[in-house]
Image 1 (cartoon, rainbow, N blue to C red):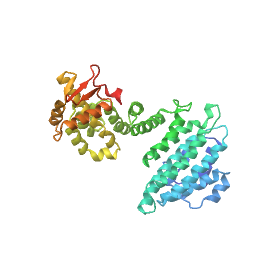
Image 2 (tube, rainbow, N blue to C red; image 1 turned 45 degrees about the vertical axis):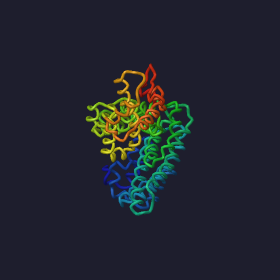
Image 3 (cartoon, one colour; image 1 turned 135 degrees about the vertical axis):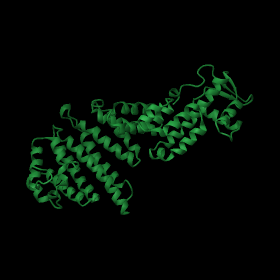
Length: 401
């Protein structure tokens, strides 16, 4: 029967059949807001409790009444109400899943209702802020608490038979939570979730798509925490395994992978930047590798809005010290000696457009580079020289960070 015109009765019949057949993917569709039944005006009912109680036992009766009322709320474009209904849907499903002792057939249903909860929370926050009734991200934060209930019901399943384990549901929910925590800027809340996944015996057996999303967020968190090696590993995995057809997602990963790679001394090719329409990085990369600080500052200023929007401006600021390192390494290679006059660095900086620089400032930059491990050596103030190690005076960036 046509989904867009069927009666509540026949809709509930279909739902009932999918529950009795333990058919998770059919039931997930029947409860999804990306499915044609939600456009059906015959299902937009404000008080559907009585009909649902005739069909279902607890907690399914509550779940379906909340879903039908949610269709009504969305029909009225009221996302605050829709969010409230969807909370009841998710909480009822958690109860139902807890009752499924030796089965995990309902996991696809959980993924669908959890996703809709997060999307309604986003829309509800927008509506509340427009009506000056709430702070941005307030509903999202509540949604995270509800989703933690889903996570717990999955993580606490101690059955040893992996085929029916609910533990398979952990990563989908963790990824939904990551999306919320990043949106509301609470990255620290990801930590216990990362611990749970990394210590799980299913760690490497989740679906490729789920692992790509997971490593993308863990990589971004590592980047914020200044753990660039780990960030490179996780973001590279996400980039390499992201579906080839999904150029948009590959581009998202690159926005964070590129700054990390540059900090570790790997400059992107012009071809890569053009292919993914990320030419904002072209001048930045060129400036860093040539040691041109003026050019770096200009490129940063020119694309400042883009870098800030992506949340990488401060990470890119760290490229300044790398730019100094690259410039000073050139001085070292040109003079080809282990005792370098500080004057030479002042001249190099002035050539690169840093006009207001004197010996003290040059010495200060050098001291910083030595302290950070970018130069092996010391400054002899008495002789106004930088004395560098005979071996590996400028260690590879990847070994320093």
